[in-house]
View 1 (cartoon, helix red, strand yellow):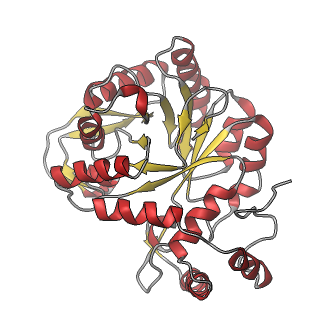
View 2: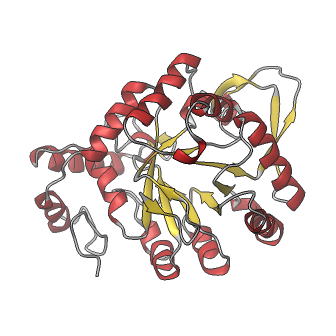
View 3: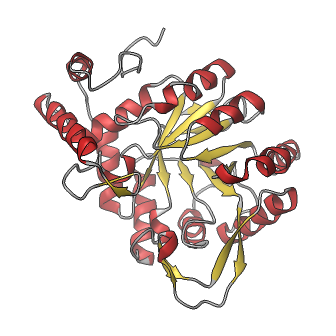
Amino acid sequence: MSALGRSGVEITGLAFGAAAIGNLYTEVGEEEAHRAVDTAWRRGVRYFDTAPHYGLGLSERRLGAALRTRPRSSYTLSTKVGRRLEPADGAGDDLANGFAVRADQRRVWDFSADGVRRTLEASLERLGLDQVDVVYLHDPDDHAEQAFREGYPALEKLRSEGVVRAIGAGMNQAEMLARFVRDTDVDVVLCAGRYTLLDQSALTDLLPAAAARGTSVVVGGAFNSGLLADPKPGATYNYAQAPDELLDRALRLKSVAERHGSTLRAAALAFCAAHPAVAGVLVGARSASEVDDCAEQFAGPVPAAFWQELRDTGLLSADAPVPGEDPS
């Protein structure tokens, strides 16, 4: 378990991302979603992350239901604010936003103080809880001014009131997260896809800033949306078809991993977890079998010779920490 900043909130090194059980891209049955959460629990996962955005609230409802019988003090749960849900006519589906659900609600960008509180209240109702441990400002890329001027102070107030225990921001970029680390008192940031075996842009500013400030980082998108899980023609990188040069790089990484008796998935997860500022790695899964595989890969050995070969061949920067290495 690792603490998130100075908040006292602790998380497991492997975390369950609940976007997939909100019908990300394709439908997931109720029982299948429940089994995925149960399997994560059986595998020792005690940190679960969700958001209103995921399936227009479906992810929150399913995660809350699956965790309902667990002692509330025995796990850590995070959700997000910034997209407020409002009723819609329900015509059509939400696949344009990535979720196979009925479009009976619509998302409204809202990082105002009132919007933050209203969004969190609605999330608590869907989750069936009276408190969550961590709340992130979700994807404020195009709403920086309101997020810093209104959204962040609202989270800070909720933390001081004891409504939430830790606060932060979650994004698919490193630059604005570094600003949150430097200019605010966030406990944690969730950085998706920017610290992987293919993209180490978070190493430039975000991770050093977080280490210096004592701010925790949770890394998401360890597989860059699929390419590092199963590199093959047509695989996705950052939710679009992977360019040929990145596919070639991923295949080379896979070949090195297999030659050293490991797997690319194990190496991808181990790399993310190795940085001293990283408190946990968040992995999405839609089924019990996917959870089992993630847990096995996360615990799987990756020999030191693998990392050395990556450095020797230019597949990994010498500046990036690797497992078993003294970061000093």
